[in-house]
Each structure stands twice: as structure tokens, then as C-alpha cells.
Image (cartoon, rainbow, N blue to C red; front, side):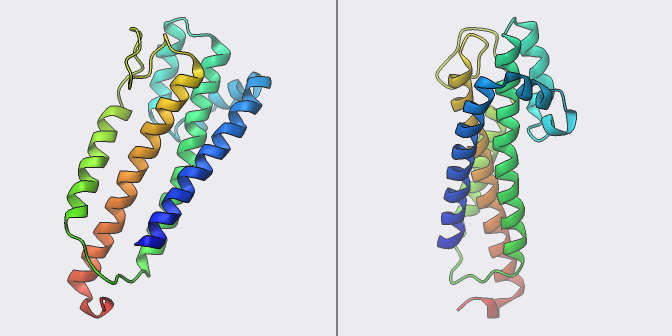
Length: 177
């Protein structure tokens, strides 16, 4: 499990580095961000983007800023999705040294909590400390989105790990030492 947690932290760090580099690039090339933001497959990497694009434009958010925000959220989600696929396939052949039952409940709670907050509509009212708002600038909204997206994938990853560990415990007692 330690190796998997290090891989998860690595994925979060890689997502941050890629997001920072892409943000800098998009600041100078907003047309590329807008091109990506108009691609429905790319936008679907973070499902909330498809609806939030209309909210941002309807609220008068600047078009280049909305393109950057939506493109960046898809990039962060894509990096974390790659990690989830890696995790899923690595769990098929994984071995556990011990099983920690309470982590399933914790990870399910974490996943549901972040799923609830991540799927909320972008607010057109003044921003709170945790909500993404049209009154905040792109950088602030990106930081909030990054925390929500990575938090959701963190909970989902822990849930996958613990479900596979439970299945290995239940169906293959020889896998535990």
C-alpha cells in the first residue's frame, strides 16, 4: 500500500506540474485553450465542464479565462485518470501484507464528499472559500478546481485499492502473509 500511496502522491504532483506549465502556456496562447475547450471529447474528461461552459459565458466571464479554466480542469482530470487506470490494472496482480477494513469507509466517505462538492455548478454569486465563482479570477478557480479534482480521484483511488484488498482477502487467503 505504501508504494501505491507514493504513486498517488506522484500523480498529484505530476498533475500540479503539468497544470502549472499548461497554465503558463495558455496565458500566452489562449487560442489553444479555446480550441481545446470547444472539443467535446476533451471537455468530457471532467464532466462538469460541459455544463459550466454555459454558466461561465452566461455570467460574463471573459472568454479567454473561461477557456483556460475549462481546459485546465480537463488536463488535471486526464492526468488523474491515467493514474486511476494504472492503479486499477496494478491491483489485479497486487499482493497485500495486511488488510485495513476501516479504510473502505473512509475512502467511500471521501469520494462521496468530493463528488458532491466537485459536481456543484459554478457559482455566479460572490466566492466563498471553497466554491468556484465567476467573481474569482482564473488562478483562484484553478486552485479550487485542482483540490476538488485531485481530492475526488484520491478518494476513488483509495476505494479501488481497498476493494481489491478486500476481494483478495475474501477469495484468496494465500495472498496475505
